[in-house]
Picture 1 (cartoon, helix red, strand yellow):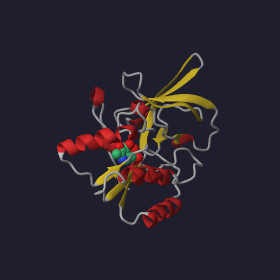
Picture 2 (picture 1 turned 180 degrees about the vertical axis):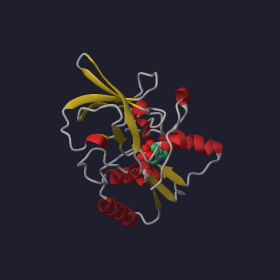
Picture 3 (picture 1 turned 180 degrees about the horizontal axis):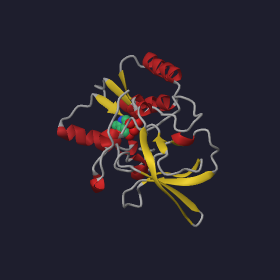
Picture 4 (picture 1 turned 90 degrees about the vertical axis):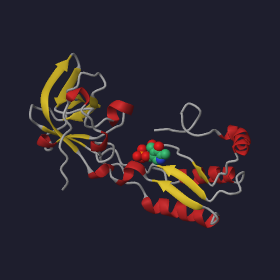
Length: 227
Ligand SMILES: Cc1ncc(COP(=O)(O)O)c(C=O)c1O
């Protein structure tokens, strides 16, 4: 997900820094921290090296800056076999930045990385159907329980726990029960043929899952079980 550039609502572009300085002077305001947020789910620790380099260039225009906030968020592995985020490489990168610029306190915003993998959403298949070439699996809960796929197309791995030993032979779209076209948990997923009552797991639901759930369409929020 990208949050940089003029087509994103966030931040102040570098080419408007002169104007910003003018406005700050008029407002008699002082800048003690500079922040960038280049995106979410960033897997390349080197990203923060370039963010730091840019922020430090900007900080040179603001003599009272104490904090450089490099933003976030750290990448969460999405698909089976994706490598985990390399924390050691990040540590090295941050160490090098800190060493080069000891005058600044460095902040980082890990984001969903901290809890995303700690939770899964479980639901049962309520119906299966075909429409021409398309196959749909309907499950008992949807965008009210996990809004990320509907809201911005986030990818969450989907597994049929009742058929983990069966061959995955069907491309299916997994949908919730809500009367909204966006109520999809995943499109074109290769799964074993599923049947009513199978248990479906939706991974990485520990962040922005339960806390962002709602009674949209009078649907119940699934109970949360901590193990
Ligand atoms: C200011 C800021 N920092 C960090 C993050 C990263 O959070 P997450 O990885 O949970 O999306 C976000 C969200 O995109 C954000 O808006």
